[in-house]
Amino acid sequence: MRRVSIDLLARERVWWQTFPDRVLAGVDEAGRGPLAGPVVAGAVTMTPLTAERAYAGPLAGLTDSKQLTPARRAAFYDLLAHAPDIRIGVGWCSPAEIDDLNILCATHLAMRRAVAALPLRADHVLVDGLPVKGLPCPSTAIVKGDAKSFLIAAASVVAKVLRDRYMDELAARYPPYGFASNKGYGVREHIAALFRHGPCPQHRRSFRPVQDALQFLPGLVGEC
Image 1: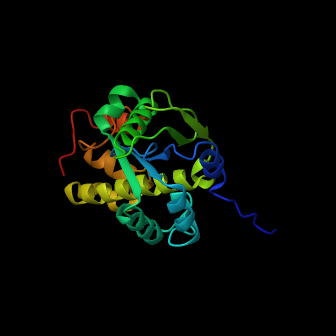
Image 2: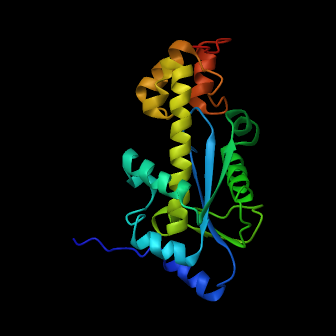
Image 3: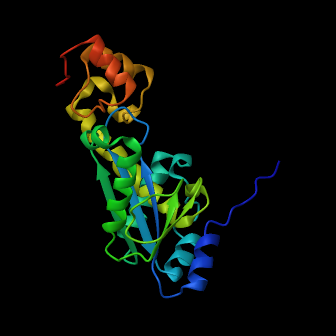
């Protein structure tokens, strides 16, 4: 079956044609599911002309970050981060905040922080997934938006690359858990290390496998 090509700028063009002088951004997150590490959100905005040129040129092939290889994600991130006409905002929520708020509320907080961190105030935001309350401007939620919207796809790359790099840094601080390869997700080797060494300070204690490890090894907090 022939794969249908999706025009990732279709939604953006509708907005820009209606509001040519207003700022549109995309926002997405990375790290909702892992047992350890922060949840990170990225927000990206650019002018219509910049978007059209990038979509047809250096950012051709940009899509949902999960569908890209690490090398392609890194290359796209470098282009996004260093292009003078592309603005990026990043929001983080720590494991402690995740435990305090719950992962959904922490994810929304990270998204609000990312949009607020944009150097240029957004008039409207395209959000990946379901609606997010409390954003600093009106928004439109798009289910699987990281594969349907160019700005959301760009935001997904920003969030994923920055979080992965942070998890690589944590891997050096906490070697037993294999964060460089699993990025905090609950793969078999990570679960085994969790029950062998107990959770480290970067583990989310509100998540079930971490709670189980704490009960299995009461009082043990990994400091590896």
